[in-house]
Amino acid sequence: MDLVTGSFAGRFARVEPRRAAASFVTGLLCDLQIKTCWQLAEQAGHGRPDAMQRLLYRAKWDADAVRDDVRKVVVDRLGDPDGVLVVDETGDLKKGVHTVGVQRQYTGTAGRIENAQVGVFLAYASRHGHTLIDRRVYLPKSWTGDRDRCERAGVPDDIAFATRSELADDMVTAAVKALVPARWVAADEAYGNNTSLRARLRELRLGYVLAVSCDHLVPIDGGKTRCRADRLAENLPAIAWTRRSAGDGSKGPRFYDWAWLADVGADGDPDDDGRHSLLIRRNNTTGELAFYRCWTPGPATLAQLVRVAAVRWIVEESFQAGKGQVGLDQHQVRRWTSWHRFTTLAMAALAILAICAADAHTPDRRTQPDMIDLTVNEIRHLINVLLIRPTRSITHRLRWSRWRRRHQARAKRAHYSRRLNLEPQP
Image (tube, rainbow, N blue to C red; front, top):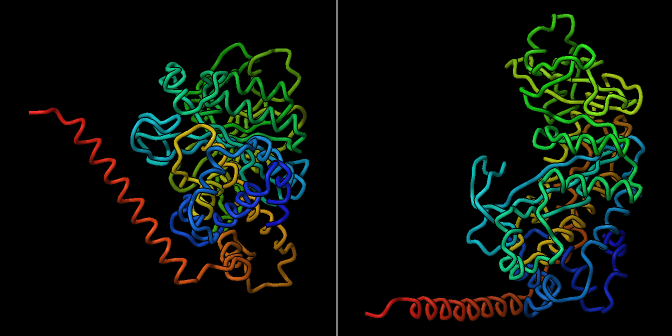
């Protein structure tokens, strides 16, 4: 833990927020059902949640600078020249209208339109491991078009509307400028269908394997005509398909049938010197198809493209671990700065687990043939059992119970008073 928390200790001018940040990250790794400032302060042995709340709201520190420090630690341990940057988004269901970025919008978390806040994330994956390294909160036009609302949520004046693909562009560009070792970018249809993002990745000379929709138009015949991706799949002979594993799952290798149209027309500038192709994946049980628009600055093999297409799913694993293990979705904060601070510290906690998993990896299975490698879940369990000392003092727990009930009583009186004052008089 000290490797990660120590990397950004110098970002705090005062010792109090520095200690609070370390305790905050430790608390996120604890076996707490809910990981808000109240619970984290109680776990840390504080008498009140003030220090944790001040860390997220008023303390002076730069969340982006801490993000950069965490990213550097991750790259130093997990970095590989053949690394993959993976873009995706996740939504957190919210009530009300005051939390930054919240509105009724589609989120894959619920699989439908809900009142939600959406964050766009960048993950880094290599043969050593994977974790989240960057984040942006998505502000819909209903927010950026209402400056009073933005001001109440603490959104800086220079923040304008940006699509989710533009946020992805921003994070990938920042990673390239920070010399993150990566050769590839992977993303789902929401980003793969975006022409501008694909053009930007080619400008950065990053190879990509981006999922696209079935109606994506692919240039053929030297770019003279365009054909839907699913129509191209219909006309492929049986010999065009080859069965390959998309990586190992919990129940064994995940085999799919793959077809590779290795020479399609340019995706934009006809003078582009890269290699454009279309990759098609077929589920050998259901027959369901998935399509990927691919580009590489130099020659590539089918095996490479299949590997990158499969790597995209690691971001889902990172979201699952982030929410299930370190409370990534439990930020009960409303303001711009607080969201970025909480999310950054959660990413630091997740980085600790990813680095521990990499350090515990056993490349030679013959040394421990009867055990799997340590998982992120098991590592967090061991951290709790071996390193984190829980506060077992009955007096401390009872003091917190009394504090919570007094606070909740004050809040109840305030809510009742406000409601009664708003009721029309008879």
